[in-house]
Image (cartoon, rainbow, N blue to C red; front, side, top):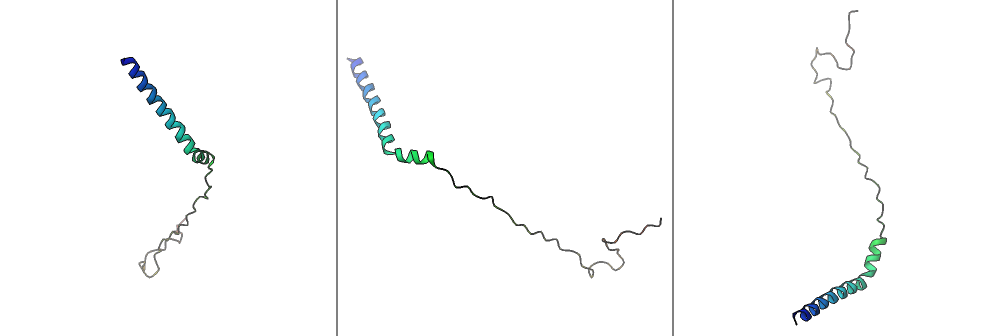
Amino acid sequence: MFTLVAATLFSAAFLLAAGTIAWMFAAYHDKMVAALLFQPIPQTPQVYHIRVSRPRVTHRLRAAGAPSPTQAPLSAA
């Protein structure tokens, strides 16, 4: 008797699971096909425009006797 009840419960559970899988496949078939065929829209890479600002030392802030860094040093050769 126990074997008959166990086999019946197992069969019912198996049929319920197979029915659920078949129902989900039938209900969501269109969405699954659309997801498999979806091709993402290519995006162009972002271009960053960076403006570098380096404030320069003005002539009036520089010491009066200090040589300019843009001038070549004088050598006594």
